Image 1: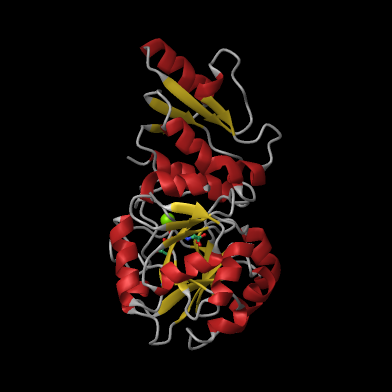
Image 2 (image 1 turned 45 degrees about the vertical axis):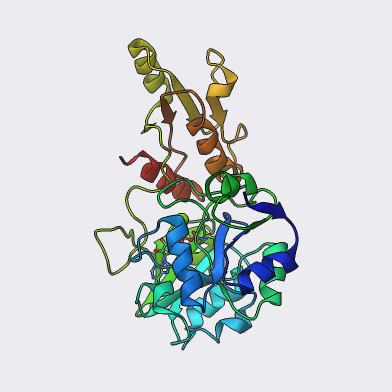
Length: 320
Ligand code: TXA
Ligand code: MG
């Protein structure tokens, strides 16, 4: 199994040897390898069982270092970077040839972000190369927000997990790029759209999926528990399953159900706080997926602020 600890030098030495390390970020844990070394990048795809057409995000420690990997940095995107980095924002920028094809799946743009976590920032400062890091989960499964999540699923395949505690945001970064002069959101995430719009004006939201290879990544079925995951009105879903005699677990925004066992229900935020709900979402989905229930019943959040990104994850989890 992987060792889990806070030893940056050890993490660095594994990465320098071409091995992979689990790293904490504010959004989710990453499965990191040397982004400039094709063999390390290939190992990431293999370890995650990830299809090669789904490109990776390059993580670096500062805005200044991004110039090493991109040809241009359009003003609007630079404004976003200056305001929100380190933070849950990923920018698509024209790549320099130093970035391996495997990182971008051959696309002209490379995804870059500066994550906001003291351990990982310190590690990136120490390294002479950036880190390619997808979420540290097997492809298609729920993203990890605790070191134990990484250990449970990838612990046998990697030597080390850098322990940065639970992720504070809990949703993957928001992915942003430019099309002409228009700012486009390619993945809803931990940075709210309203925050972006305050700086650059109205943005366009582009949902990408496997049926749209020009903008790969967001496959329809994703973030998915193994158990059937059903979205709807919880009271109605509960009555139906009770009538059918099906053993179920419940994931609600804020509500508790006194008639149900406590271990078969999780309220993401009793105070109806969307930041708290986002932070708890993936851990809650995992806990219920590991319960003895046959099916998970869940409800959508209000479609405001982070609710949009949470609902995107819930809908994808419900796709069969
Ligand atoms: O918060 C995050 O972004 C986390 C942490 C670890 O940083 N990383 C993450 O990586 O969520 P991953 O690989 O699970 O998701 C990255 C997404 C994919 O959907 C991928 O298609 C998209 O970013 N992406 C990466 N490079 C791209 C590119 N050049 N063009 C379009 N989409 C890209
Ligand atoms: Mg992922």
